[in-house]
Length: 286
Image (cartoon, rainbow, N blue to C red; front, side, top):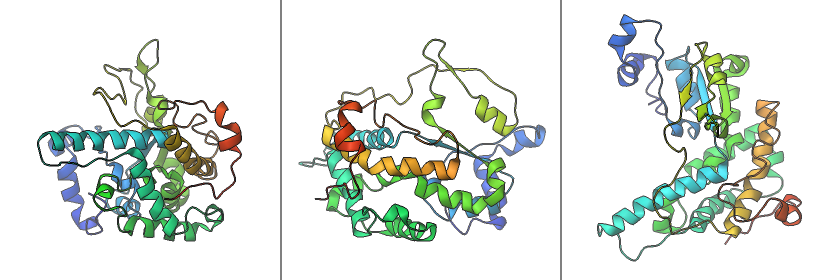
C-alpha cells in the first residue's frame, strides 16, 4: 500500500479500511493493528510514505540469512515453474539457482557495484546506485523474470540506510531490526521468544509454541544449490553483512557467521583461505 506515493494523508482512511478491523478497534482502542509487506524494504520512498500516512506506527524489520533467504525465494519460484510445466503452460524451460545469481549480479556489475571501491562510497552514491539497480531492466531474457531481485534483496545495508535516515533520531524508538533466526523455536520447548518484540511494542509478554516447522520445504526438490553458488553468495554478502554494524550497532558485527549454513555442503573452515581472505573484486561474472 505505502509503496505508492499517492497514498499519503488523504488516503489514511483508505489505508485503515484496507488493513484494520475498524469496528473491533473502535470497540477496544487498546488493540494494535499489524500488516506485513516484505517489498516495503525494496522501495526507497516507502518509509517516507509510512511516516506520512501512519506517523505513530512502529516498524519491525526481520532479516534472514541472505543466502537462505535467496535460496528459499528460488525454491518458491521453482515450485511455481514446475507446476506450470505440469499444467502444460511451459515446455522445455529450465532454470538454475546459478542463473538467478548471475542475473542480479550482472546488473550490479553494470552499475559498478561489484568493484572494491563501491562499499567505500558515500551514502549518497550508494543510495543513487541502489535506486538505479531497482530501476534497471532485467538481464537474461525469459529466465530473468523468474529471478528478478532474488539476490539483491539480501543486500540489507543498502535498504536499511535510507530507513534510518528517514526517521533520524526517532529511529531508536520507531524501528526494531531482528534476525529471523532469533525467532525460531527453542529446540527443547518449541517456544518462540517474542520478548524483544513485545518490549518494543510495549505490550505484555506472550508465549507461543511453534506447531510446524519454520522455513521448511516439504516437496522433493531437484535444483540444489551448488558449492560454487554458495561460495559466490558468501563473497557477495559478507561485506554487506558486516556493514550492518555501522547502522544497527552492537550485536550486528557478524550477524550470520555461518552464512548459508542450512544449505551448505561445505564448512566455513574449509573456505578460510579461498573465501574469508579473498580481496575485492572477488566475483566471477559470466
